[in-house]
Length: 247
Image (cartoon, rainbow, N blue to C red; front, side, top):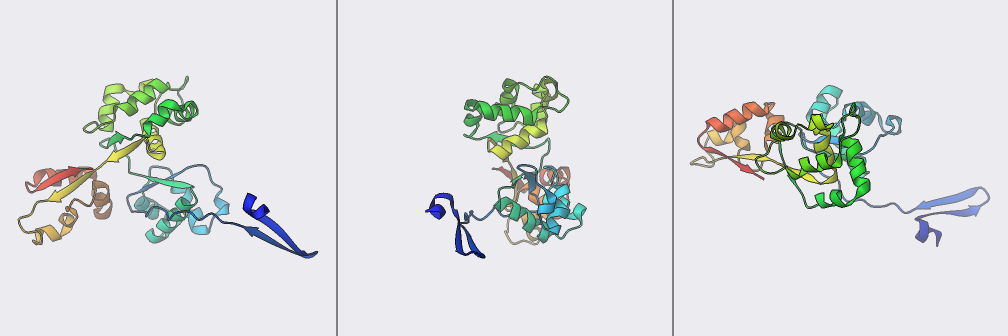
């Protein structure tokens, strides 16, 4: 009965022997970790409770560095970094978000309505996105206004120029991070497509062009080819046979 009710129980077999039983919760398989993903801690963790490799990468998990950069700066093999991050995702300690850039475009999701209706969630949001030196804290009205204006064609830079979040005590990077972590917004990404006359032409299968099939985002291509976003954008814009799909 105790095992069914509490998922744990102790069975005393003899004065010197006790069996401890616990029903472990089986979690779904965690999200596959990519080079261009940015891991974010859901809450503070104690490093000494983890294995040595995880302890080595934890200082670099700041919600800004992506997996490739963490592996490089922590001097840890990429596959090990991915394995550690995936393990922490399994236990609900880490979530993954896209790389932040001011040229990024974000869209709201139906879950944004929860923020409008939940007072405690609003308080959490205000504390998270308010600039540290901001007194008083940012108002929920200003924060929600920024979320509501996220739409196709509106980059983070455009949003900042139009509403000046800093003047309202809002940290725009924290605003985006909180929205992604809670599922209130999602990244609207660009996927280049090479409209070659022959799908298997030499140009279409070498260098950057092998990624231009509509299945690889700018983030992925930049990470794998060590290119800046601007370099890739210029290459795409100059080629008459390349179009961009937003999704």
